[in-house]
Amino acid sequence: MRAAVGDQLHVHSKHVDEADQVAEILEVRGQDGAPPYFVRFKDGHESLVYPGGDCEIEAHVPRQGR
Image 1 (cartoon, rainbow, N blue to C red):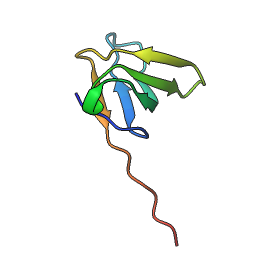
Image 2: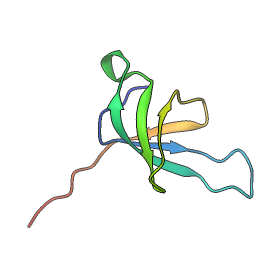
Image 3: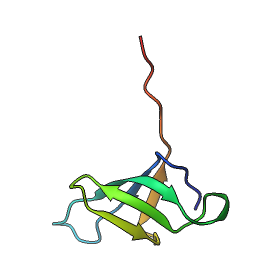
Image 4: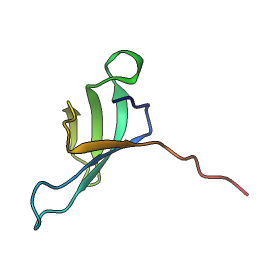
């Protein structure tokens, strides 16, 4: 798994009645984009994450200005 600052960490739910979680990657602490990642979830909670098999990285897509 490789990530960069600004990418999104998508944590898939393990249960039918739970929502997926999405967090913005604020820091990449491993070498060459490897975990662990320091992230901020949408509710403002920040945490150091070692992502498992239920996670995927979604690359940051910069918004285009007019």
